[in-house]
Image 1 (cartoon, rainbow, N blue to C red):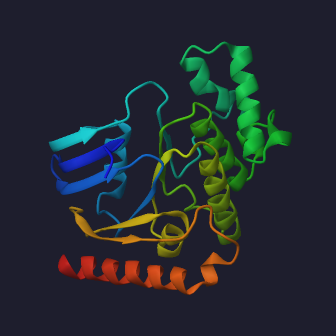
Image 2 (image 1 turned 120 degrees about the vertical axis):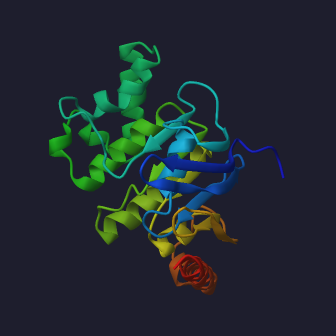
Length: 250
């Protein structure tokens, strides 16, 4: 195995008054892979993502993160777009904060919005965007800096099934261009199997590793992949691991 681009090593997170929220938990991420974290509510999936993002530190254990400004990007469940800015200005913001000239940042932002299908909405404000469009703008903002590590925290949870599936394909198509390492959190087993090469099941909180399933199929997924035996078998394997992980801590 090559050296990981990021890792969690025996990490534990304790919160005052709440006790242990995560761990001990290990996760090593190789360059260009897509990993899904699934598990019951409260198991620490989002906590693990925040550790990788550098938004908080572990109580114990070690976190190795991608170094450098703009090399880690996060997309949350809510699009978190600034309502007073246009889509292009929202996407350009991380570039401007990194010192890129406003004119150059806008050019790159418009290009990023075009890649996510929002070429005609560059001057729209968030209130004028549908839920799916706002999430596409958030993806464009996350990808505009060319991150090596992209963290997705249930980004499709509030969207309808048709939009979720379309955005899953969008993410995989965007991944194919620059191949960042992606970690995404989801409660949806089938979504995890469709998007990831490796699905990590976490036990009920405090979350630990409850098993892994490797999905041996090319990315981006071929049309009709959800109807294949490989997809159904992988989804069943993840579901069995998830049920076992929940029983172990019942």
